[in-house]
Amino acid sequence: QVQLVETGGGLVQTGDSLRLSCAASGRTFSTTNMAWFRQAPGKEREFVATIRWSGGSTYVADSVKGRFTISRDNAKNTVYLQMNSLKPEDTAVYYCAASTWPTTATTMNLMDYWGKGTLVTVSS
Image (tube, rainbow, N blue to C red; front, side, top):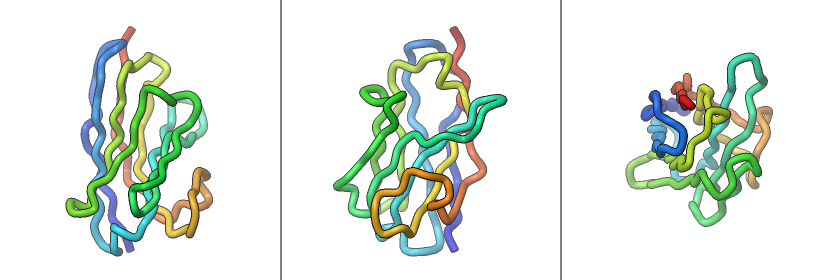
């Protein structure tokens, strides 16, 4: 079992930066692949970024490429999502997820654990 708690959401303006954190407890974090998803009002949840357990491989969605960066600190059992140049269309609830899938996973059905989410609102 893995428990995930997201923090760092809030209200920002267009062009601002924000860093989300996801603290994990339970299963050995250092061997678990981690990901961020988001769900905007009235829309389906979508993939944002993922990082392999070793931290050596990352993948981000085209919609945030060049603006968002995912990283992790296995010593702190924490994964981060650095979001720069935020746009109003980035407004969403951001969810942290953990996957025991052996390779890179970017779809919801391959996630085994989910946090409750943190709201990011970007005003224009």
